[in-house]
Image (cartoon, rainbow, N blue to C red):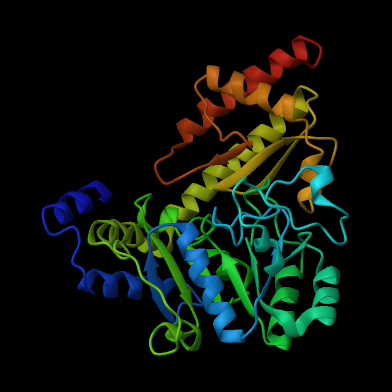
Amino acid sequence: RLVEAYRRQAEKPVIYGAEHRLEIEVAEKIQALVPCAERVAFTSSGSEAVQLALRLARAAAGRRMIVKFEGHYHGWFDAVLLSHHPGAEEAGPLHRPYVAPESKGQVPNAVENVIVLPWNRADLLEEVFSERGEEIAGVILEPVLMNSGGILPAAGFLEAARELTARHGALLIFDEIITGFRIDPGGAQKVYGVTPDIATFGKAVAGGAPLSVVAGRAKVLELMFGGGVSFGGTFNGNPVSLAAAAAALEEISRDGGRALREANRLGGLLMEGIRAAAARHGVRALVSGFGAAFAVHFTEATELTHYRDVLADDRERLARFLREALEGGVYALPDGRFYTSAAHSEQDIEQTLAVVESVFSGWAARGGA
């Protein structure tokens, strides 16, 4: 369906230079699924969507400081490519992490507008708001920390972030570039019952086509129309990507979200199968995340709470696992992430688990190598 939608639209204009019907159609589909989506805007990449979300938050609150969490990734732009994967020394103390740039060439003053905290520490978030609440424009987070190991939110953490931002006049931003239209048709905000002021989406929203979305409260997004917030882009809402999005969202919402339920069910089977294979062969492995998106860790830890826990992973063993799995025909991301989709089948899961079994049994035969 996606390929056919692409083909049909490619025979028409691929850019209009003005608003068009597909924008309205896709926006309405998103509004029907996503709790926070009173208004919708389109961009071309996740990084662009995050920049718009941050600009809107600062304009709405009339402040400049943004709170982000260690290990969370919100795109490659200077303003937020901070403390994504810092080393132990660069990270600083757990209770007050350093704001660590991730790339050469970043402007030095980027660190002046961001406060970094450890994930899942509601007590430290409350402490920062009590100290600097009048400066904070917004809090941005991945509702499930997928860019650093698939760490789920602790019970009550998202609710605490929602309450604290509302109490102090700041905005809550969910970066759902990964969780959106993957964990559930309504995103992580639907699963966890916490509605942010703004959310960003990408990747799955158009089945992999170059499209991203900023959705949120009407009062906030309407700042782009007469409220002084500048926003633009030649390819924002391009018809080819929106045609793919219309087809993808139709499939995602069909039969009450059956496709995503199946993708998450298959992912759950894969997670449990990897855990079972590790246990059979005495491999210390931890699998963390949700069905359709999770990560494998080789660690002594029994649970993961924040990014510092991931720093303790055995990276050499992970690299060996990924290399041997690839030799068997299974590819996972370099950080150990696996994804399942509506295109996968139970046979795919069985074949993958057979490869994992072979890798772990080989390790056991070599004395845990």
